[in-house]
Length: 116
Length: 113
Image (cartoon, rainbow over the protein chains, first blue to last red):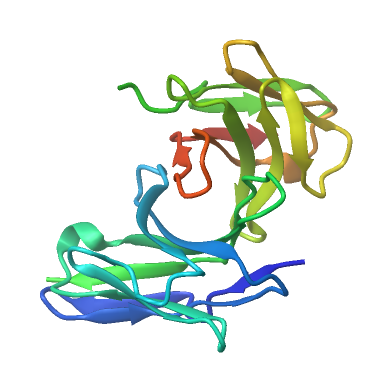
């Protein structure tokens, strides 16, 4: 079974600074998708960024980028120029590419605080 | 385009009762998944429906069940509620395609007393 581990229950960053959230996963499959979701106090999960395992290039979405190390099974999220609105729970998630399942396996999350 | 709508937003039930939660996916999305979120266990997959068929099921007791209608709307039911069923229940919908993302609703907060 696949597992996702987020080793940092809480992180804090100063506004305008950069922060990196860690995620490792375990799988025996070679093709899969990785995601970072953000959950603000409103509770709605919002996709931040997505990475296809077959792509060697790290995904980037504006201030958000990932460092995907497939051999190490590591998938960290870097937030640049942090803003107050980035404060939220961040969840790393895994999804198989085969098998016709949309099941997401989530890590336990990292609570990010942004200090003004 | 309307997002994923979950009703009700909040619910308080008594132990032993049953409850039904509803999820209306984004128009055109045929896959609906349900997750339970608790402080202790985090986000856990309950089940997934696609075209009215359960395609995948998580490791939950049989008290948890679901269904999907022809219009893709989905319901989940929990019978004989226990205190430990108190949680945020999230629904996610997705269109066809491997690379597309799942969109989540705001969840139903269930409290069992």
